[in-house]
Amino acid sequence: MINDIYFNEMYTKFVINFKEMNPIIATALFKGRTYSEYRKLLSDLLLEKKSTAAEQTEKLTHYSFLNEGRMKRLDKTLSLTKENTNKLKTLQKEYIWLVISEGWCGDAAQILPVFHKMELASDKKIDLKIVLRDENEALMNLFLIQKAKSIPILIIIDKQTGLVADHWGPRPKGAKKMIEVYKKNFGIIDEVAKTELQRWYFKDKGISTQNEIIEIISVLES
Image (tube, rainbow, N blue to C red; front, side, top):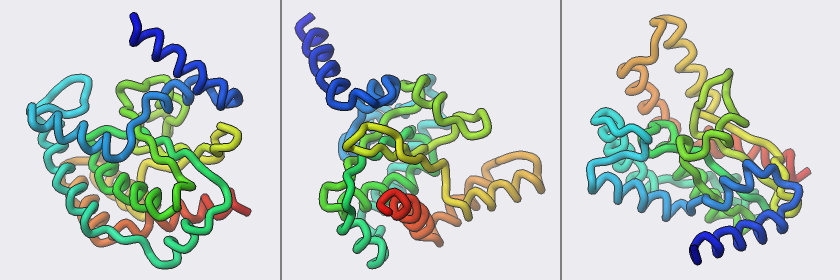
């Protein structure tokens, strides 16, 4: 009961601070994890041979295991361009980046490390929070892509007003185009397509993702 009272009091204070914020977004944001908390969640689940999925399967756990390796590599090797770093260091406004993700998602594994590097470069002007799609259905339903629950989705919130300024996802334009062409040619997205998508990300080195987000932020800053 004490924990419930504490949660309700903290949630009420949170909502008051962002009184213009959509209550669905406010509820999700209150439960949001930092990048390090998200990474620990995924690692801890894998120790139990589990994924973040609501329904556990060997296939999703396998994807999560692959993504763990990808994120570890990107955390060590990924770099922002000098130009993008400079833009992030000179942001005038403050933002909350709320990301809808899952540990088994191959796109999320490639993109979230980019968001984290951008957060670090922003001199605390960006506050990154991550929530799981299957635990936040109402939030996901606000940001469907052609009626599909595609992830990851980045929701950019103006920290001063609590209002959504823009959103982006689920993958960079080049990767999106590649998948669209593959599906047009073969009718499905199979393991070959997923492998080609990961190769695209490897060659791109996070440049497209950071450039597209910087383009959005530049408009918001103007």
